[in-house]
Image 1 (spheres, rainbow, N blue to C red):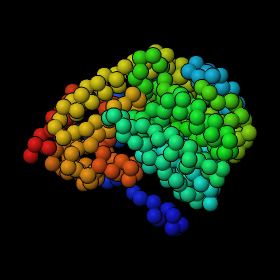
Image 2 (tube, helix red, strand yellow):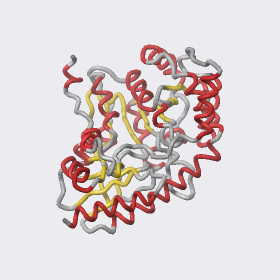
Image 3 (cartoon, rainbow, N blue to C red):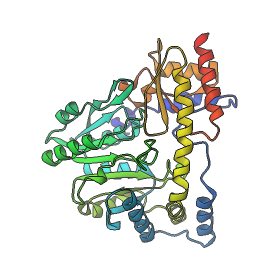
Image 4 (tube, one colour):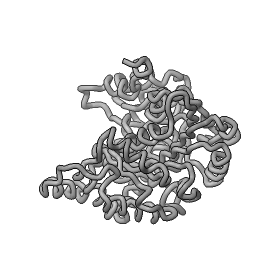
Length: 383
């Protein structure tokens, strides 16, 4: 085994979840997915495809009709994007790994804005690249980007800049001004931007249907790759379907890498993706409204618990908070499972920058579950 693989840390979220295995009394909010199943109109499309016998290989880059649908969907939110710049992938994390395989290798430098979902920073390490971490900061109760520090970190030696916004776990959302400054700087340094924008539709500002995207300001030939997923906005976490938007020069390489990784996404799952996009205008706004109601239930309740500090968030599906006097987030998360029947993700899972924090996924069909969870947390802290 390669030593770099052996040294990769195990998932601390899974470690906490394992502490609750076999217990049906635990209120689990540790994983980044809704407890609402995929809508029937999406499931039915996959069933029809299977019944029609669509069990064969597809084009490496995806069904042409799905790429065209993704082009229309992306263009409805941002500047027009030609279907030739879109690759269908077997999940969002597969999209991110393909982008990293195309751009970074042994000895390359990758700069990452952190804390962040650990898979993103593990991918370049697996490929032999080094990762320089630039931490978000908490200001006035919200996580914010130290833009001067980030720009100073990205130099002509930086092959890739990795940004996830809206951010998992903090909920931080990049501003248009920050995007513009970063894009201009990376044009000067020759650095590729890999933007993980899978949470762009889960955005709660009333004047916007999605969070700011680099696609709004970039040119087609910019060194920009944007990764997306059907998982969050369409409740399709288990389906493993995503897509990439990349410049034309990169598409042949992505097609080759898909061949060497998965060959193609399964056709029946791509048919489900087509149905999801066809129903997006009717389905996604309602989902976002439900998620906002969950957020507005959970965050004030957490803020009302003595000793709890909650970060303000406009995007994503997580409350990120810390508890006074509890600096070891993994130990606290394990105790909450065992002693309170409450399952949360430890901040340490997302890097040292998030130690002392806890992540609570608020994507729940029943907001009352969130209230019950807060009651369990408050009772635990009073003991």
